[in-house]
Image (cartoon, rainbow, N blue to C red):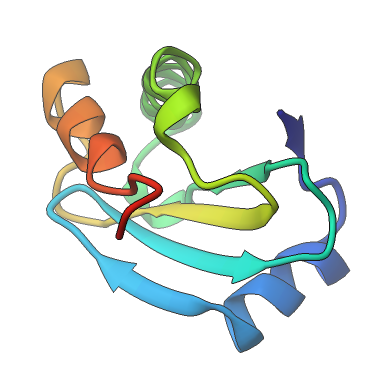
Length: 104
């Protein structure tokens, strides 16, 4: 599993992908011709200071790592943290990541 690197890749997924709004995150998914899944995480400065944003980013990365086999192959995914749940627990984030299963 790789990451989306530049702004252009993020914009392409957000503009052309399907959006799904969950409790702690909003997810944009765009199928690709490749077999690999690429993921990008976006956290606005409105969420809080850098300490809060980095803590949330670490929680999101870990939840993604633990549930990577559930994610659809050949898809670019952008995960955007929602404003309200900046203090979301790891379990809440993981529950939302699990909702992105291949069969949905």
